[in-house]
Length: 229
Image (cartoon, rainbow, N blue to C red; front, side, top):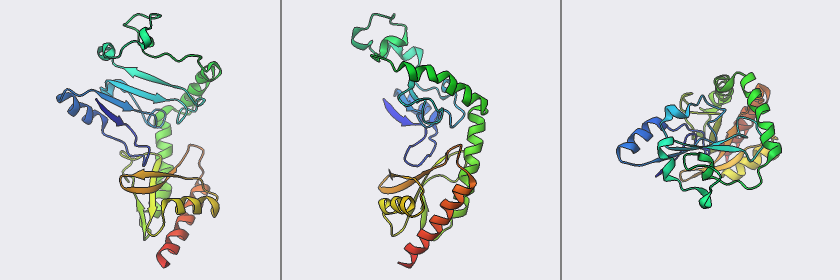
């Protein structure tokens, strides 16, 4: 089995899922796709991906309460997953006998329809993707050429997402993250891309251009200081 992230959480890069699935299938390899950062951020049709198994998160980009998600198992692959602890509440042909959740978070589940309605009222994933791409390019396009700043995310809109990884020569990821937080009041997170520790900057639907102006100004100051040092 091959485990694949549709959107890499370290730097937001989109994986060519369909092409990878097709290659894996030629070699008899099943594919499990982690779509936690794809659902709600990007237009998504799980049937078009041709994956065997997939997991989805409902709080990252749909806006449902934390702790909610769902699993996709292609019908032809269902027999490969044993029923949970011999579950007999549902027939073997029913996906629900593959997972036992104990006491379900009923309040969170009951809030999910409202989150899905809000997602739809915003225009769905297509509208969200356009908004996030515009915000991303608004700041990335202004810092990409800064001396000493490295972008470790794709520049092309069709390969990138709202998540962007950056690094500044002469600064550790921790130093950069702490400087953005303590000096400029900007929240980012440390992540690892290959052999590099980086800072991941993520725009949200509610992010304003004024906030991104603040980010650009901060990166200009920090790259200049690192270059002088």
